Image (tube, rainbow, N blue to C red; front, top):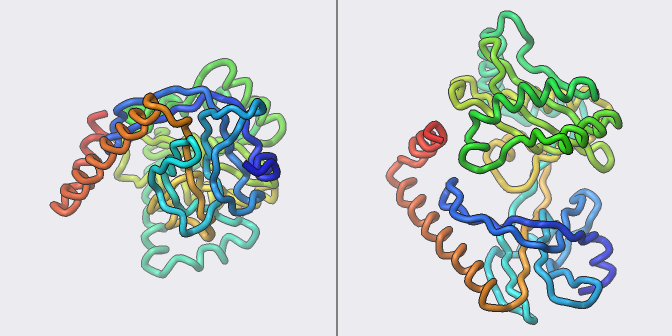
Length: 318
């Protein structure tokens, strides 16, 4: 691997999780010691993804996370130079540039769309009689209160119940976000409806004023309030009003809600690399078979017009 590229990507030793899902249900999660790169996509140029090589020139497991890449790159598995290359996904990494005026940003929404957004905002606002609809937290002394409220939401969310994406509450995590708050490097947001906290986002700030859409969750009992949409709108509105934030990074992976709010994107990939041996061949191809079966089943369900109903049922069941 070209040493110049290696330096740019800043590979670091860590423990990664190689996970397999059947739809939204986790089938397995294998923890592995690896080298990982999670570059700042706004600073790193487009790369040809390649495995990392450690300082002893030994083949190791490596994971390139949200790496800017060529639009022509395709997901898939191949074997090259003694490695199993698993290009897991190629996607548009969406973001919102907040350097302009908020009113200018809103002009990207057509009349009916903007009116629908405003109706959703109004519905949430009118449901509250004792509290503001969206409350932000940024100071160190506010972080424990934020975590207390956010955790009560997270425990009910499908993000925690089905995806295992729980909001940490360890002392180390509390100390970490408190330190970030002391440096003005984190924001927490809670959305209220019926004077009840129903959704949260916890967003660290990195680089040159880039705020990351990171930990999130909502209470499915209040889905009638379109919590995800309303909270994203309020967060973006506050980002435009905050001169220290230049970009709202909507995180990895595509999604209709991300594309809906974004005003920019960068093509990125997630890629895993494994030394070629039977253990890793079985691990990678097991995942391929399971996830391909899931996609086939989802396609059948989608054609039958049942996808959204089943997804809602599973999330409530979780």
